[in-house]
Length: 301
Image 1 (cartoon, one colour):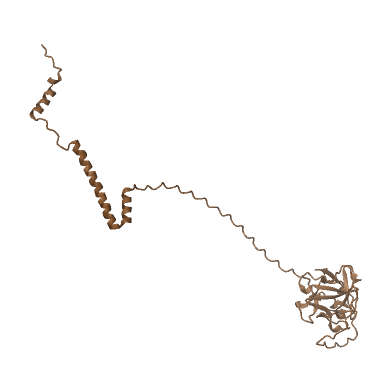
Image 2: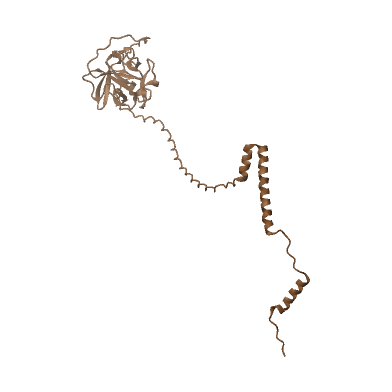
């Protein structure tokens, strides 16, 4: 006969062991503070902490002063200040790109002064007969003797194309120009021929005396017949303007665009010595003959 196992928990081996353990050692209550006492203890500790803080604040007020005590009390009681979130930094603006500066144009070299034009041989001139005997030249006086001023005619009868008060350059048929030697401004400066240029030594202002008669002004003086001489070959020079007949010249056309200048004192014409085309050839008076050495073109300046 099989013996059935009992299903009653009170008869299980675990239950029997539990009973044996409590039978040998009875249950003892857990030691410690009861729940009521725990609450009381927590309140006592809280009051003590508050009293300690108040005492500490009073002591600080006596040591640091009232203002510092208030700051300490504020530091204890006030909540910490939280710094606001930092604003995002603005993005840096892009730097403007510098435009390249335009390159300065290179200075052009100054043009060289024009070379003197080639000397063209003058047309063959008839040989001028030399006088058999030339009178001895009288010594030049220190001061030119005063002469009676020639009467000034009215302005009628002036040469067409030549304007009163205008400035001209006198170009000879020998291709050179009437020139004041060395830009001289002193009385007695010689008049010669030179290669044509645009400087003041070759610019003459014409002032009308009427009936085709003019005075020629240059560098502050006038073109003058030296010593009012009546001799052939007498020099032509620059002299202070004095409105005398020795400084008056009758202009008359002898060829297309060419004129002769006849001296009102002697009746002779302005002439290039021996018709030469050399630079620096002297200008003098000689009897009028219509040759290239006495032909002048007026070029307006």
